[in-house]
Amino acid sequence: MRFSAHHRKKMGELFGVEGFAKTEKCNVCGGTYFERMLPSADNKDLYFIRCRRCNAITYNLVPTAEIQKKIYENYDYWGDAEGGQYTFSGEDRFAKHLYAILPVSRDAGTIRILDFGGGDGSLAKAFAENHLNSGIDADIEIDVVDYGDNICPDSGRMRFRKTFPISSLEDGRMYDIIIASAVMEHLDNPGEAFRILFAHLKKSGSVYFRTPYMYPLYSLMRRFGVNMDMEWPDHIWDMGKEFWEGLPGIPGIGEGLKCVLSRPSIVEKTLKSDFGVAAASHIMKAPWHLFHGWPYVGGWECVYVKE
Image 1 (cartoon, rainbow, N blue to C red):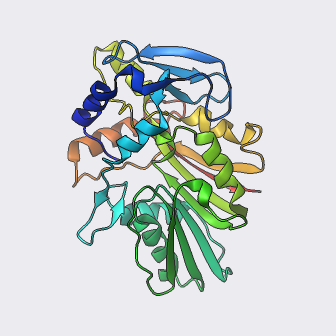
Image 2 (cartoon, rainbow, N blue to C red):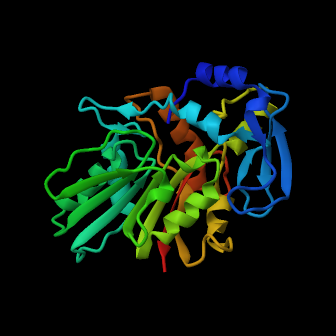
């Protein structure tokens, strides 16, 4: 999801502090103890907090449901010449990345994919096409949960459905693959979304998450007097290694999950689409592969399997 820095500034000016709710508890795990962290350089009333229970980083002030609705009236997708909607620069590249890390049983008669926050389903479609092109003998059903109204048309052995909100998913409808890329950071109540997603994941099914993990880099840059745009108020969560690897241990949410992949996320921009940002992202992520304690990576991705 993309919003300009100017738009974010205007959102803050329009609604002011009164338009945001004070964080009383962690809306991931329900924890009530927070570590106060750095303030925002742009707003004296705003500062970061870390939940001591689950390690999710958020803010002391977050948008109300009403404000979030107004924010997402200005939702801006990436797009392509065919009109596809997604939240990544080059869905084919991302789809191949997911194909390599999200296995699907080749014996399945029907593969069900849930694309949470997936625009019109273009990413899930590209992901599914990789499986069909590999010769897998299955029909593919793709359900998309998203604010927008557009949905990819049915094509060959692929069928698409759209629903919103996530609580509207059919009881008992189970999925082989769940994709939740660049969406959890926007939610006012990600704990509820986690519970619903995991309840709809089949046994041995896989779920993929990708989120910003920018606070360590923000903290480093502040030491040098540089103010990074953390994209508040549309980004209200920062979730990194400690959070994601601890999620299976959170009671009531992560039981029965096994973390099979946890690492810095794929670089969103390409050298062709934005050379400077892509090059900087590769440079910042590279040390992690040598020194796994390196936190200045900008984003995180993980895969869980339901046991």
